[in-house]
View 1 (cartoon, rainbow, N blue to C red):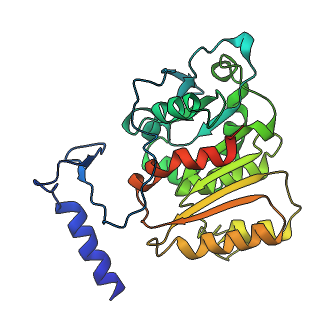
View 2 (view 1 turned 30 degrees about the horizontal axis):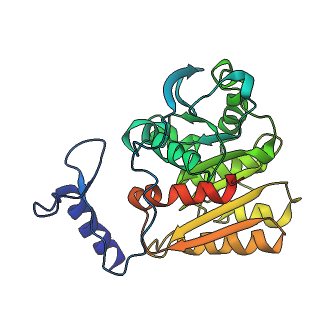
View 3 (view 1 turned 45 degrees about the vertical axis):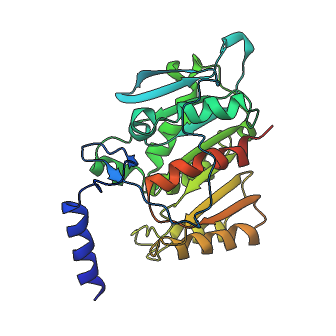
Length: 285
């Protein structure tokens, strides 16, 4: 029955069209854009993602590091002399660079005093096959991410080297990879922001055939100096349970944690709506 439901959902996704009577849409890589629906009791989220003329705008540009496109954000008034700045490394830069730009979120949070002026690096997630391989707790890609702030493209931003003022963030498989990178490089990343992290992941290595590998790993290894913000949607049937079990492990091991469950699914719309509040949880002065 579950398989038949999956087939029907895939058919709807492939053949659906936007609601012609609903002017509210959500951008996609290729048209048509999706329609947005919210029930009357939906909790209002601050629209940090909406550009505000009253918020001074930072600068977003692109660089290339080891053949990988990386978007870079500088806050308003950025100078190297004023550094070092807190650092955000946000995975899937091809999503957060231009499609769902994170720059207005940072502009608004900085202008409102919710977070200090920060710099950000947004590495491209590459193609689907590459992303699926690299974000599956790949140590080589974790090393690339840890070295990115000290690359020439990163040094230009004058980022801090203090892991307590550095956040690595991601969604879905990106949430898993953000967590793995911080766990393996706590000297570089002292804060993890995971939205709908794919913590169901199974390593498939001969010595570990259990699903939810990262939670098992954290339960039996030395606690790292890492602060966590983890959130997941109540309608994420595959992801909700593993995120709750990760939460329990983190609390049992004494990790600093802010945890939230939202009314929604495995959806970019939810992630964009909530990203500003999640960043505040880790970067607030």
